[in-house]
Every structure is written in C-alpha cells, then in structure tokens.
Length: 179
Image (cartoon, rainbow, N blue to C red; front, side):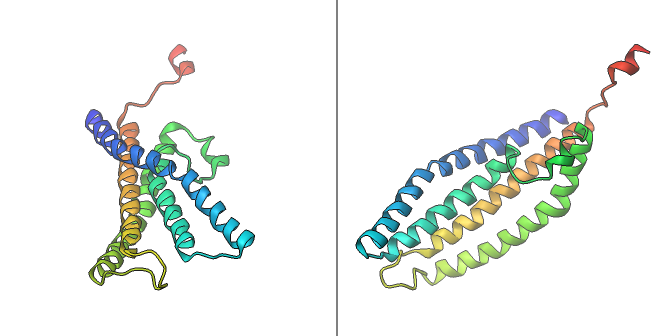
C-alpha cells in the first residue's frame, strides 16, 4: 500500500516539477519585457499595450506554473513557528486534513470556474479589448485552469505522502527502547 502511494505521488511530481522549472525559466524574459516597457515609456515617451499585456501573461504563466512546484518543495507560506516544532506524524495529519478540507475544495472550485471562463473565451475567440493588444486571450485563461489542476494534483500527492507517513508503524524512541 505504501509503495503504491509513493509511486502515484512520484508520478505526479514527474509532471509538476518540469512544468515548474520550465515556468521559472521565463523570469528573465519577464524582467526583460518589464525593463523594455519601462525604458520605452519613460525614456522615449512610447507606450505599447502589447508589452504591458505580454508582461501580465508571462507573469501569470510563471506564477501558475510554479504553484504546484512550490507546494511540492514546501516553499509556500505556512506558519513555520509552530510547524517546525511538530512531529512528523502531526505534520502528516495537518497536511492530510488541510489538503482534504481546505486545499482540494478551493482548487476544485477555482479550476471549475476557470474552465468555464476558458471555454467561453475560446468559443468567442476572445482577444484583447485593445486594438493593438495580444490576440487569443483564451490561452492565458487556460493557463489559469491548468495551473490550478497541477496544484490540485500536487495536493493529492501531498495527501498520499501524508497517508504513507500515517500508515507507517510508529517509531519507538531510543529512550523507550533502552529501558
């Protein structure tokens, strides 16, 4: 049972890790677009809607592509003051309950509405409302959906890892074993 849980969690990691790494590689491009946009605006009094929208889109791809990756590596925000003091089993219980009660319902709700938003946008061929803006706005709306699906999958992986910890036999402390 524990081996199966580990395999499923590892399979999910094989999807979320490359997506997160690839998304993070867009950060230098995002910085370049921002610098170019600001330089043109304040240095030459030229504003381009395309650059502004492009930076929003790249930022969305980076954030949504890295959500699951950050969650996997425990790089997300948590109250570490308390969490660091908890035993492995207690951390597993918190991760299990938090994943089932808070994370998954939230992710499912956002993904559900994001899919509807994407589907409608795609059906009308939505683009930017600005004449010189970027076409195919539905692509970035799909990224919102995909980012939350990946986060949900990584949440499932975290739940499976918690179950693996909770199903393992409790470790006997060294003091108890010596007495």
